[in-house]
Image (cartoon, rainbow, N blue to C red; front, top):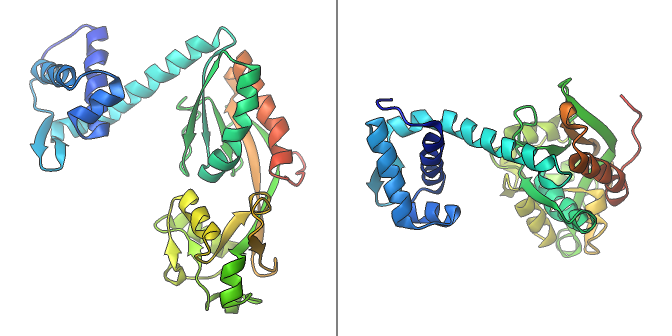
Length: 304
C-alpha cells in the first residue's frame, strides 16, 4: 500500500469498499449503507487514490473487482467481522445489546424465529441478528455469539448443551401419494420423484451412510436451499426428508414407512465458553435450551 492513513479513516474507507464488493454496484452498496451513491463513489475514489491502485472496473453486469481488490477481500472481511464482534460484545456489557445467532435454514425459519418473539418481549433491550444458512458461522472466530448445531462441537473452547435427537424421515404430500402410490421398499423409491440436495455432496453422502444408496442423478428436484426443498415437499412435487416435528404440523404431509429410511440427528445449543457470563447471551442460551426440546419433540440423549 502506497500511502498511510490514520486507522479510523482506513476502516471507514474499507467499509465502503467491502459494501461495494458484496453488493456489486454503487447503488446497491449505498442502499446497504443508508447513504447516497455519490458518497460511496467518492469514498471508493479516495481509497483508490490512497492505495495507488484501481479497485473496480465497470462492466455490463455492474462493477467488477480488480485483482488488487480481490487480494483485499480476505483481510477486509476479517476486519469487518472483528468490528462487528467488538460492537456486539461492548453492547452486551449492559445486559442488553446485540446478539447474533447462526442456525440451520429450516429450523431458523420454521422454529427459531417464532421462538424469539417471547424472548424479545421478556428482554426488550436485546437486539437479535439471525443468520440462517446451511453453512455455520464460526463461533471460535466470533462471527456469531450463539449457534444451533446438528453436529456435536468438538472444540474445547465452546460451551455446548445437547438437547436431544430429532428424527428425520421421508414424507410426501397426500396428493402425490394418491397419484403415484405409497412406496414400500427402497427399490420402490427408484420409481418415484425424489427431492434432495444439488451440489452439497457432503449432505447427499450422509444419506448414503444412513442407508439410502441413491445416486444424485435419481433426484427429480435438487436444491441446496433447505426451504426450497421443504416448499417442494409441501407442494406435492415428490418425496423428501423432513424433521418429524415439522411434518406433523402439516396435515397433508404423510410419513412413509420408517423402514424405508429414517435416522436421528442430535441438536446442540452452542456458545463460546468465555462468554458464559454475558447476561443477555446466557439468558438466550438457557431459553433456547429449555424451549427447543418440546418444540422439536426431541428424544432425550444421554450426556456425552
